Image (cartoon, rainbow, N blue to C red; front, side, top):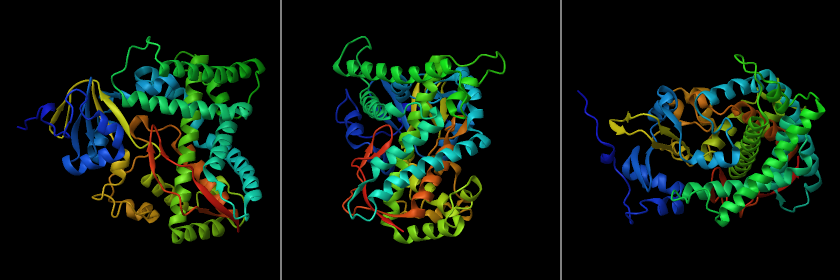
Length: 453
């Protein structure tokens, strides 16, 4: 008979302060903290955080257990409470029966035939980006690539989600989202929060951000309802969605939460992933040549279509390997509903189970030379022996990111069209310093020189 060990028997990092535990180390070191603890303590350990029980797991089989095999016993972790403050009760943060209903309502908007309709939007917006790059190409002056990719991904999400109805406020939304990201990280970093009614300077700023977000997104919804115009965009699809059992549609508040979630998740993560991909390709000109040859051979100078983009197999490998090296969502968490057992350890109810995606993606036991950029890892024949959850940039199980295929298609279209026309060389003095907030941003903007092909 197997005996289980108590939660307190889990190994844990040294703590310099009994009151705050590992909090300062986590805040200061972030990704390096998790890398170092895996090397020292193994694939399961507890982290000392005041007011919370936290366990970290990095073994793909245990991650599968949490996300898939026993997913009904796992809700969202404490970090999502802070995210919910800004994004509301959308698909990313909602739970239980409400989440199931919302997922059922939203799922048809992301079916393959709907993605095909959005494909043309992606091509049109990328064509506009090419016109901007054309003016800056061959000048030998560095182009702010981060800014160009921000505009491009913002235009794509704007056209596919809102039919370009937030054109005049996109810069404002971007600043609000960036500020919200920083406030969410600050809350997650500090578990010793004062009650919500205490008007601290940060709380006052947060309320202002929320007020301005609501003004923008409720205005879009109200205008659409007044006009009663049908568009082939995600907002129309979500407004038309009806619950199979009750026939009810989403309220304005539900629509606000869903479109804000899609807007944030569908914009910033893709922009970040594209930036990292161009950086990696600059560092590996041999891989870039293979990719550009494939694009020339398969597209033959024509705009991509849903059919031809699927023939760009090496491009898909490049995208996957880039997200292995720099996963935009670098960490995720769940919380036990009832007591559980992982690897022989008792995990009490209300325990936060943290899965640092970045660490799993760089595990040298799974990935040979994990810090190297090798797109060929993702050729079908090389994935046969890999555990499915040794690579999970979009999460997994029933709560797999609903927009995963949208994001991959968007990255493929943008990469293929840009590299079809230009050579993009990230400046050699760019230092890939990580800024792991809610997403894994580069600390500094990426600049590149652009040359016409």
